[in-house]
Structures are given as C-alpha cells and as structure tokens.
Length: 581
Image (cartoon, rainbow, N blue to C red; front, side):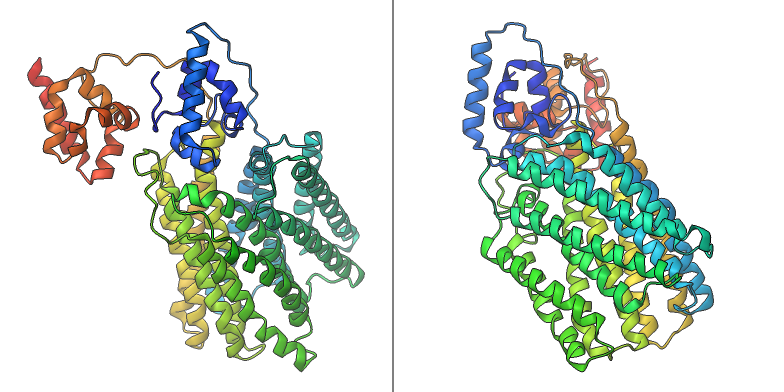
C-alpha cells in the first residue's frame, strides 16, 4: 500500500501492521479505535504536531523492514471511557434539561410573564444542565483527551466508575429533591452536595495525576486545564454551601443574588477554561489555520482569572453596597476584553493556511465551531450592555437571561456538538453515523437559540408584547429537536461495531452510486475520465491526483466539493458505462 497524504491511518495499519510501532511512538494510534483513527495521515500529523515527511519516512522504513511477513496486530482494547458520560449527559438533557426547559418556556409564553414559574424548578433545571449536560460531557471528554494531548496513560483509571456513579447520583438527587415540598427527605440535598464534592475531587485527582505523570513539555494550554480544575472545585464548594443554606433555612430557592453570579463563575471559570484549553491545542489543525497567538491567549488567561472572583463577589453585594455595584458594572469590561483577545489569539475566523487543502475529509464540524464563537461574541456584547440598563430592573434581568442562553446554548452547547461530531468518530475510528442529521442539528439549534436570545431581549425592549412571548415559547422546542437528533446521531456512532477484517479488493463495477470511490470508477472504466473533465473536475487529468485523492473521495463527496448536481453526474457516468456493454 503506497502512502500518500490522504492515506487513512486505520487502513494503513490493517494493510501493514508493522507500521503500528511507528504510530505508537508518536502516540497516534491510541487516538482512534482499536485500529487507529479514520483520518488522513497529513491531517493527523498536523493535529499531533508531528513532521509529516519524517513520519512517512519512518512508516516506509517499517514497511520495508517488515519484508511482507505476516505480523499479528496486537489486540488493542478500544477506549470507551467517555461513552458513559456522554450518553448520560444526553439522557439528562433530554429529560430534566432541555425538555423541561422547553415546557417552562411554553408556560412563560402562555402567562406572558417570566416570573410566573416557581424559581426552585428553574434552579433544579439549571443544575441539571450545568452538571448533567455540560459537566458530564466535559468530564468524559477530559478523561479521554487529556492523556492523549499529554502523551501519557490515564492514571488511576479504576476510580473513574466511582467518580461517574457519585456525580450522576448527586445530579439526580438535586434535580428531584430541591423543588419537592417534602421536609422528611430534604436531608438528601446535603447528600447530593457531599457526593458532588467527592466525585469532583476524584476527577481532579485523576486528571492532575495524569498531567503530572506526563514527560511532555509544558504547553500554553496546560495552565487553562489546571485553572479550570481549580474553578471546578471552587464551584462545587460554593454549590455545597448553597445546598446547606437550602437545608438549614428549610428553603426551596437559593437567593438569586448568589445563584446568578455562581452560574457565571461556573461557566467562565470551569467550563470556558476547559473549552479554551482544548481549542488552543486542536483548533489550528481542525480548521487548518495558523497556531495560536500565545501572547493574546496568555492575556486572556490572566485577565479572566483575575476578573472572575471580582465579578462573583461584587454581584453578591451589589444590592448592599454602591462600591460593589460600581465594581460589578466595571468588571465586565476587562472580562469582555479577555474574551475578544482569546478569539483574536485563537485565529478562529482567519483564512485557512491551505496546508491541508489536498486532504479529503469531512469538515462539516468547522462551521459549528466557528458559529459557536459567533455566539460567544454575541454573549460578550450583551454582557457589555447589561451595566447600562439599570441595576435590578426587569429589562436588565431579561438581558441577563439572554446572555446566559447565548453563552450556554450558543457557545458551549455548539462547541460540545462540534467537537463531539469531530472527535467521537475519531475515537471510534469510523465516520459519523449521519452527516445529514448533523446538518439538521446545526440548523435547528441555531434557529432555537436565535429566537430565544433575541425574542427575550425584545420582550424587555417592547415592554412585554405578546408576539415576542410567543417566540420565546417556541424556541425551546427547536432546541429540543436539535439535541434529540444530535443525541440519536452521536449514540448510533458510539454504538457502531468496528469491523476488523482487512479491506477487500473492489468488485467489478457495473453501476456507480454516490458512495463509489472516484479512483475505482476511472481505474475500471477509463472511458469515464472524459465525463469527469466535462463536469469540471480538471484535476482528474492528473494521474497522481486520481491515485491519491481519488482513492478516498466518493462521488457524493466530489460533487459537493465542486458544486455539481449529484443525480445528473451519476446518470452521465452510468450511461457511459452502459455504452461500453
């Protein structure tokens, strides 16, 4: 098997198992399924910061040294450590999370009043989303990704199941018990808080021990991971304090003056730090752009981490102190600057370097990642507007709700979906179950988020016009549909059974379909080459391109890249083949 930039790592290992030692040297093979990732070598070399030419040279040397002898591939166990976290997150968001949220929004629309809902229900729903949807996804992905970016095995892996059991139990107890008016079982709130702390401490112990066991040099993203861990435990301690308050005061609602800044501490501290860390390490390869501007992202790190505690404390005391109020209003400006500096440093909206322009692979996730950062910009603009709306006014509260939604759904959920759609297929060594469903998810989620964010703002500006309340009520159902489709698509991908048989030679083509490889068509039916040229595939005249890109590109993929009508092209190819008969 001749190696080129589009050679799939999984296929190369299956054809030439002697190359496994080279991939293991560069820690590449453990990033995919039991046979390695289903991605082109050129892409993976860039993603793992390995020199492509050096890698190919070593692979060819390994193949030559193998001498064609039969070598058994070592039995590698697929790492599924993230799956239970991801699947549970999907279940929780489709029940206590987005489903319950959609019902709440519909009720608000019917009453035309955002204060019509029992606030304990909103807080229970919020906790299920923060820890059940976002928290579980980040924890599961971190347990898989951190060992790979640090090139070291996951430490104390046996504690993961305990960590998972504790956090899921705590989430369920909190979501169920907080709004219930049964004093006899209120002690379970304390149990939920204790279990949450224990779980997060176990998670932090596993992650930190893994990071410190690595012999890799310290990179710019490392401090984001470490600071995210610190904010995670701080948020958990604050949450335990809020639970103790609920129990001690026989209360069902956490004071809004504490709960609201706590949510922002959790999102900007723990969640954003972890997302930023992963993005710094991977986005330049995923989007084929230049490496990050380290000075800009370092500025973000320091400014944001200094601002977060000031923001939290100032908002708690804003109702009691003029100084705290002014501080809460001013601190949003350095926070906004830090976020804009990070986006600039990440280069997420810059043009491609074209280093991977000849690499054929699914890049549908790219629009999701970029759109997530558009929503982060929207969130930041709303954050800057809020101080000018009058402290404690109804309009300010509505803008505040829009900010939370743009941040949690627009940015965080969009990033989760984009990265899951890219990385889970990589983890499995397969393709995403359905690209079409991924595109539907993208459209529906953006529609729902757009309606919710801007209709809630318009409710405040218009002084409560009913048409905007109706829009608010519909938004949750778009998001529910989007996350339901995403959950199904991701679940099917995770449950796909990996085929371990060696690739067989292509059968004689009698009919071309959308899945037929370009190389196979021209190789078996040379007369079809003219059809490709007639439809604008000028590069097909180059035999090297036919032998490289043509081996991995299907007809469907090729027509999408060149904006050619699929059905017309298939008819032309099949008619040409029929003429030969």
